[in-house]
Image (cartoon, rainbow, N blue to C red):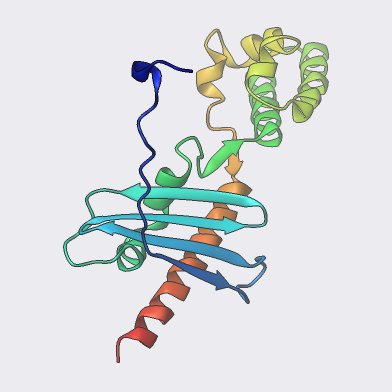
Length: 192
């Protein structure tokens, strides 16, 4: 039998009211499930789920008089995505863009006679392989010499703009727009 001091304190359970919405018919999106929870004045939580992925945000300082749904509708998508996934960016690394940049630089080096025809051809062909890398980190191995020769000692700074739109960002942005649209429709139905 456990000693009195080792007995855990009794569990505490609180109830809250949660509103669940299921949104269908959004263009090119699976059904979206939204859970809204107004926890206290100026405090609320939202959970959005679509196709097996979920995003949750809590705000402890919402504007006075707004429910979590009303507050969510007032926010811009970039701000919301920052709450849902701090690591997500609207742009992502593009091996294609980087390969094109390196090839343009090689052509410029050839025009300015910094490279002879043979060296330029070899580097240009090697730059084609950059299209198949997954990230900037993978360039440090096999392609380090190429990157250094073409872009310089701190090549990673010059290649930072080799990006393309992030489809995950665009996808989440479309979901957020659909949720905001649905919440506005719900607010119009509730408010006569």
